[in-house]
Length: 326
Image (cartoon, rainbow, N blue to C red; front, side, top):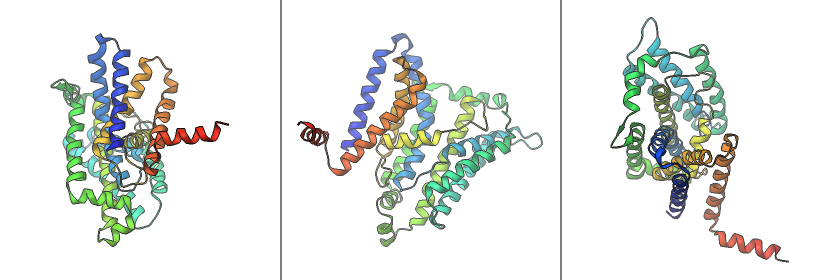
């Protein structure tokens, strides 16, 4: 709770700095754009957060996004048997679930390290995405225009993408924090062997974590197509896995597993979007944007390690002072 409060204070500070740096006349547009971006990327961060809490990691999230987006376009634009958008969307989500099942199955039953499995998947799914579309950029604007217009709007001054994220956030929160299955995620992430000895089917729940993570990636892929009206097979989703993991970690999810919350992930996602926005407000070169994000993530990880060891910043300062005062 103390760590979550610290992250929230950091978010508030970022938001206040942006308000001071921003022209009041452009507040509405800036808030709408931020809401849309947070709504979109928060979906990925929620999926990554669930997996990290269960002690896993997925480096193929971005490639899964690219593959699912390409398959969706292929199904809708098929010249011989075009599918209705709802049917294509359901099939794409099922595809994401299948990808997650494959990742989880290899990790649990073949005992291959998650890093290796998902790193291989990063290349495999990206290649499959390029093969599906033959490296062509499809024109799907006309097919999704009504959905795009609806999603680009707002309700009660809140962008629709942010409403979608809040719905997923509520569902995920109930599952993770209010059901026994969610508690199993924490138990497996904290100590998988102890969880197995206590009677938890660890293999099933680890696979479920991978399935949910990839399903969230497939949902983001659908939102991406609707929002951008375009898919670039070699680039769509590129490096998104890093931003998803970073958002979850900034929100309090420990890469060791067993720690984190959906609220923290939501806060971490907001921070990930506010940081680039602040760099633009302060006219920091866009080339330094990854440096700013990486620095903030590094500080967060160091802070997490200090809290884990029970060391405060005062202890660190006193140690440095005693060591170098002579």
